[in-house]
Amino acid sequence: MKLISVVVPCYNEEEVLPMFYDEIIKVSDAMKQEHPDIDFEFFFINDGSKDRTLEIFRELADKDERVRYISLSRNFGKESAMYAGLKNSKGDFVVVMDADLQHPPAFLPQMYNYVKDGEFDCATTRRVSRKGESKIRSFFARLFYKIMNKISQTEIVDGAQDFRFMSRQMVDAVLDMSEYNRFSKGIFSWVGFRVQYMPYENVERPAGTTSWSFWGLFKYSLEGIMAFSTAPLAISIFMSILGALLSVLLIAAGIIGSIFLPDLGTALLIIGAVLLVGAVQLMCTGILGMYLGKTYMEVKKRPIYLAGETDETYRGRKKKNAGK
Ligand code: UDP
Ligand code: MG
Image 1 (cartoon, protein in one colour):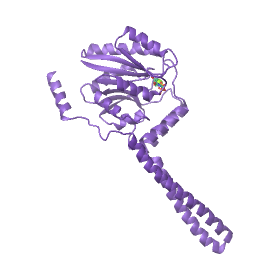
Image 2 (cartoon, rainbow, N blue to C red):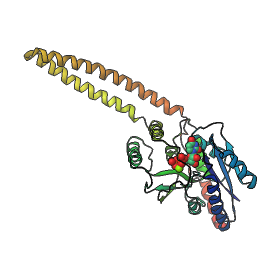
Image 3 (cartoon, rainbow, N blue to C red):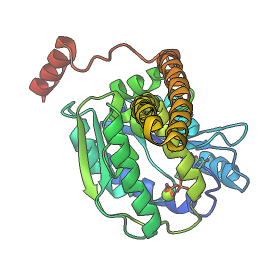
Image 4 (cartoon, rainbow, N blue to C red):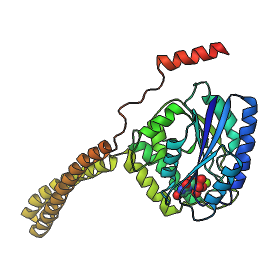
């Protein structure tokens, strides 16, 4: 038997949870009919909700023993809730998805087909449109992906989402990234593995409201840049070099100028000197920052490498396929 864990972080989702449950049961029953060798567990995380989310978990657990849940002591944010879910899930495959049906359960059968034989380690959706989202939000989202992919070695696919069907191997890799400031779009991409992207159109929430404000998203995107790039530090060093060059020009112009126009020459000399001091300071801060940045990346204690396929998994898969 193979176990599939469906991990669902929930924050104030009393309105959509019953709908979500009905939907996921429908899909999982159909999948079980097609593949009799799979079992499901539905693992819900209550991320410190202030509504009846936890009571609904209890009701679901009463009537369905495949339902498991964990209730966090307060609101830790979706990233932490997701980590808690991955950490406590037992499945050979793990699905992470939102409770609000913006990640349609109807995708699961196809996703399972991609990962079931080890062809892919992860199947995930990619939004091809941002329908139903405000223009400003879309604009800034696009801008973020542009900047992020310019300055970070970890490529983040525009429109990639936290709707993922993963093998145990990939889940364990994600859990190995035990950093505290989690930016999962980056983490999922950093661990690598073979990922299948499935295009889909944005779906709107049937009920409830998004818990993301514009400010919240802005902070989250800064978090992402900080977690996967030290480029902003390099920028300060670059600026300081520009400043130093400019100041040298000004000082040279000041020296020559003071022969012909003493007032202008002196002014240029003063501006040049101030700029030079500023540039030197910025350079020192930048260098200090670079070392701090290295320390920052080190203290995350990320794994040095992650293995994908080995001869063992390859032979195991071959044997299993031959037995079919
Ligand atoms: N969520 C969570 N903790 C939070 C905020 C959100 O667990 O602090 C969950 C939420 O219940 C939902 C998912 O994360 O299942 C996505 O949240 P939301 O729909 O608000 O985000 P959006 O789809 O607008 O990005
Ligand atoms: Mg949503």
